[in-house]
Image 1 (cartoon, rainbow, N blue to C red):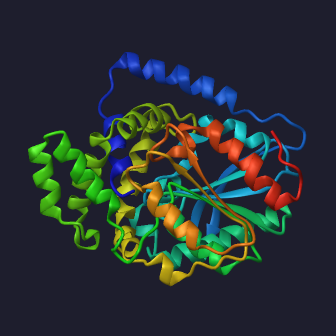
Image 2 (image 1 turned 90 degrees about the horizontal axis):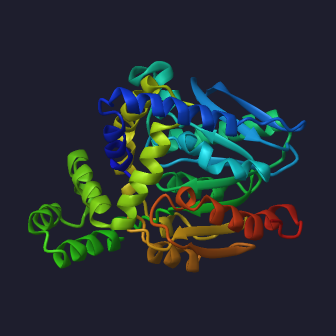
Length: 359
């Protein structure tokens, strides 16, 4: 969600003491060793690919090219999932995992900076995603890929899944955003209740001054709201510190300079958020011609599971399933990568391969 990872990154990139830099190097080296893929039919490649008229960063990793191919659509906006690669290493034993830095994000943003990103709109990102999909089909020799979208990326993910059953074998949403043309305000009202219960008068005044209509907020107001969302909920705040910030700081795939670029990319990509807020997913359509899954953090205060469940209940699909990820708020798949993998193996993989559930 808008602004949240930017807050984390600002913490990460504050001037660190020399001892912490040394510790960072040790952790990065350990992670890099963990990430090595040595299986004979594995793949580990990353680089810039010409997509939508600009160079965009695509990483492809997996231990067996016969496994189903996942295309992740990251959230943010502008918040690449590449930093979570050490946390999701086990996924690569069962899937070929593609992490793409969308236009405006991370390494793609770093290639040419703000002047080289071109058009920033949901429609442009949709066309980019289709080009990435065709690139993967050709590069990996597969007919279809499996869509896994998280947070703000799930807005784009739903659009792809609705319209292109010929390209995608299934849709998996996590931290699923369900916009309802501005009518979905559960997270806002829950935040007001938490602040009132905690006696946080100053913070409560700031939130009530915003009003519940998110489409009317400025970027600064979004940042205020998201900061209070994170800090008012202990589980979300803990996830930011122990999962998000640590993943950023210790990523073996990013230099310190690239972490600065990561933050700048998120700031640049904020321009896409207002368009997302106004979407009505029910009006866009609830009929899907591919298997449809939503795996939501049980205690997600940013994208509450109740809203995702309401949309899920109205979805028609050949196969569909909803599951809660326990002890998880937002970033559920990265806080509980073991639980998410279990759901992928027992629910999703059988639906796309026809094979029995694997462990």
